[in-house]
Amino acid sequence: MIEIQNLKKSFGGNLVWEGVDLTIHDGTTVAIVGKSGCGKSVLLKHLNALLFPDEGQVLIDGRNIFDLSYVDLRIVRQKFGVLFQGAALFDSISAYENVAFPLRYFTSKNEQEIRDRVMACLELVNLGKIGDKGTSELSGGMRKRVGLARAIVLEPEYLLYDEPTSGLDPETSDEINDLIIHMTKNLSITSVVISHDMHSVLRVAEYVAFLDEQKLSWQGTIDELRVSDHKRLMEFTRASEYQI
Amino acid sequence: MQLFLEIGRYSRLLYEAIRSASEFKTYRKNLFSEMVKTGTDSLGIVSVAGFFTGAVLTIQTSYQFTSALVPKSTIGAITSQSMIIELAAVISGLVLAGRVGARIATELGNMRVSEQIDALESMGFNSVTFLVIPRVIAGILMFPIIYVAAAVSGIVGGVLAGLMTGSVTVHEFMEGARLYFFPWDVAFGVIKSFVFGFVITSISCYQGYFASGGAEGVGYATTRATVLSCIYVLLSSFLLAAILL
Image (cartoon, rainbow over all chains, first blue to last red; front, side, top):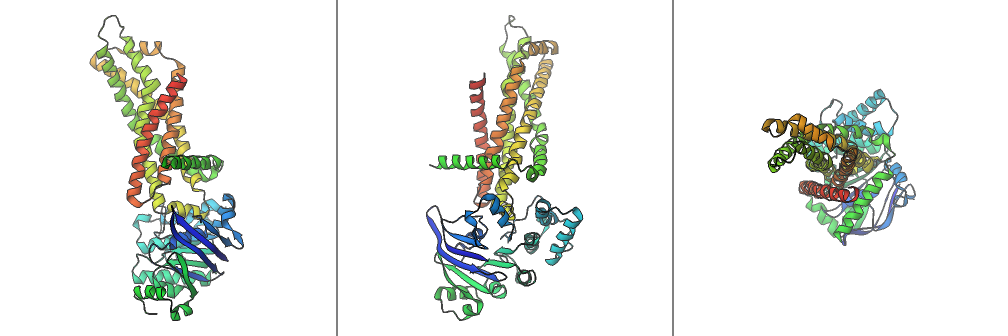
């Protein structure tokens, strides 16, 4: 379980958000939505301590990750898989090697075992025949799927998705949405999705938190979202041109 | 204020690098590839720069020494000693500030702005161990080799220039070079190249590692890495000369 408690972050005197409280239960998918530039990605990077807050704490299974030593923090980070907005693939190595990368350093698997695991992950994201393609040869959707395969290769407990469908066509977005649902349901992974794509959010999430005006101004289940009369949230969903 | 902030961040990066230097397994593979990129791949350009520096030095020295009272072997002594004490290290340092420094800052800067460094950290890697240490160690280990290559090619360039212009024979050149050859001069040059290797790679890693702001930010980091590397190469050359000579 991830518990975000009274989190506050600012950059050089500019407040990003404060008083953020959110609990993410195991096996659920939580979406954090909000306008571009409201600090969604910043919040996501606090969940595995890629960024540190001004105040507050994030408890992972009861332990505040900001109090951990760097060695312990690196162990906790291995519980997370992260799909970055641009996939963040290492461009000096092939797509296959990107997925194999964590296995080579953090496991004692031999080459055959690594190949089996990498191929299993690539097949899970429908890229079983990608071979040794370089990352520059991949389309946006393929990059995201390779990024997702890399994120799950160490069998994480938590998956963090930063704008998983941004820049993708509707059909590819739906494929990514299906994969997110598959990860949560079939692999029992707890997922946190950052998005401003309400179509995607309504498909994949069970719980939604709305980041607005430098705070988490609303949170609730998808059913509660559908009947919410929160003015700013309604404006946001209406602006996304999606009829709830 | 900004200066203190930068010094603080640079010191912290170095501290983190030194602290995690024992994790050899993590950066072993990167270290060898960096040694090739920094050292082997730079030998050509540094040898060319050293060769022409030695050649020009010989021609200019013979042009300035017109008196019949000065033996021709002095040309060889001046060229070889200048190359060994100062020019081989500084010329190769300045060339590599551009070649190696710019490459390191661009690589790390791109990795930073495309979140590849965040991806490394989120997997549980220490990104400093993985990215900074192999580059700095490769610089420290390979720069002395590059220095030797520059010094040798400079002396060869000097000999050939003397032959071509008829200003000094090979025998006279080598006689002067041998007469004024002191092992400490070579040791001094090697010490300088160790320092230059560290200065160039650590500054460039720092600039790239903390790059921000997309393509423009990477360009800015690369420019700063190159300019600051050149300045600190010259500054450290002066300080080492003042302290050790």
